Image (cartoon, rainbow, N blue to C red; front, side, top):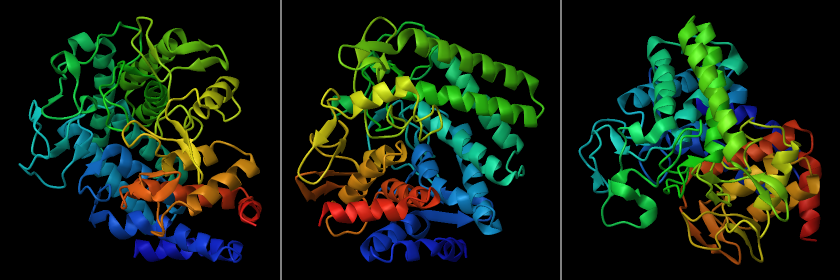
Length: 432
């Protein structure tokens, strides 16, 4: 079984953690959590629920399995990932504006949304990153394995659909997409009869919602546009493999237009940090200076491969994100890190802490983060969506597989870098 394959492959870390048996226990549980609790696999089809919500997000399902790609040289692991790539392609073709899907058609809807989505769709909040994550997964899988069997006509049609949607949303006034929800917080619906706040054409592509599933303040979500730029270039590489010259040309052209739009409209001169990325803009001179723990975030740009972790613009932006200048950076007795307006004010997200750890080479910083993660799981031995850094027993979502995968990825990356022992030793010293 694929579970046994991966469990056996991670045993090498146990010796490294011999002085930290509790870290090993939490790591093993988190690393295996997606496989053991969220995967529903059949021949050629892998459906991955997010955890306590029994639906599959395009973003979450990718993020939940990225840490398994290092083992995709194994046939069983490779087939599991190929099944997920196929399911994601199928979902995108069912509705490219949806963010979460049912395994089978269901007329149950958790919310009263307009227009009503198809029975295959659990939620229809349009988020740029929902279309980026399947491409990221497929590209990293191809890079790791060289396998091409997943590049079916359905996969190719998914790529063309993604490019078409990104192109359409460069001029949102001409878009068919609308979203309204009744009896909900403002963050769960779009104003202006479901169209969202006005934007100018910039070359960037519009998003209704953030990766937190909260509505954008301004329609051009900058980290998501940078993510789209990268994945469009991956689409162009796939198009070359698929002998689709038109798709390649269109993807590259669109990526260049988005890059120019970000350069022209999404950089802001901050009085303390210098030139940094805004989180959102409307192309009309308005900016939202913040960051959110959900990926894609400004903090996560090197984690996604969009820029180098030592890029000067990124470092300036990172300094802002990890400061009081970011309205969603919180500090308490047990931790400090990036939170989200999606959860209670003051709550820190383990995903944000893991991203912070994976976007620095500073061993002391990583030790502080690992120590915080190990002392804020409230005895559950797994990661939560968010927690109160002064009272970690107050948290949201006990079963949130994405966060567990991120902790597993952080620890495994430290192992691969050869710094895990040093990080753990320094973390122990913090409590001595």
